Image (cartoon, rainbow, N blue to C red):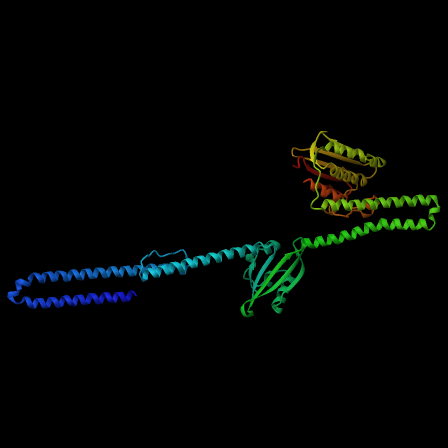
Length: 468
């Protein structure tokens, strides 16, 4: 369009020039005549001046038209170049109504559409990235050539690796676990989904994973690669094992007293009840086993109640010193037959806290009772109360058999016993410390243990003064 206007302008200028040259020649011939020289002299000069003025105006207008069109085209070209570079914010400023204005409007509309499209793509990309990075599972994307293209944050955190060490490398060169490499190879070979539960060693522990390998197929079933997803199911496996252990332990603990009661009852019915001494001895054993069975059932019900989500404490103000003094007085009868020195030590006798009186008594009866049980005759059991600013700390220390360091992390597990034979003979159910831990944590407190084999044990409970 610009070349057309340029050619038209040049043609008009040429026509005007030839027209005025012809007029000059015509009037020159006419003016050769003497009688007309004076008459048309002035006309000649007027025409000459008009001729040159017309030429100057034509050239000026041509330049203006040329400049206007070239400026519009140049501005549109610059905006197009910026759009090609990815700068979708570039716009033209032309507002004319001719073809150049239409071109400018079209370019601006194109830029707006591209900017909106890129904005939507960026939002989708951000959402996809956030989803991949925070999906709670490890993820690896492998292309059709076996090169790793993507490693998300979940995988990096699980296996403690840097994504830069994996990206653009063959999967079997960087993935150390042979089971994982075999799974990837199977997906490549079969082009089918593969799912396995793998036990993978990670540093000082072993963790269970549900690993899913999924083939990625594009249009027309074109092979794109493999997507690998790791779900950590270690905690589920632990819960499953705990459930199995719990059922096995409950069955065993219930079976033992029931078997004893049944056996001695059958013996008595077979004629042993005619012997008074045997009758009294057997009935005593039956009563003891019945009490043990009752204690086990009560502890199971108590633990089940404590572990329920809706479990609530009856929080009231209380003097923890008085509570401990009552527990110590209650357990003196258990300590005296073994000549154990049981004492409560505290600088203050008025230490107020908030808590559940009955549940706290249950905690300290259990701890102090255990200390007496596992302390040999003529030993010492001390209960030390320390009043701190925001909390209180209670130490239950004995001079008993102690606990090996390897056993300490497990003593709060249900039915776990350091010495099973001795614990069962002492009448324990194996649930006491599990109940203690739950009740202390229900009071937003903490419990810890210090112990060395043969040197006694020390249980330390820390409670807030104000639970509100």
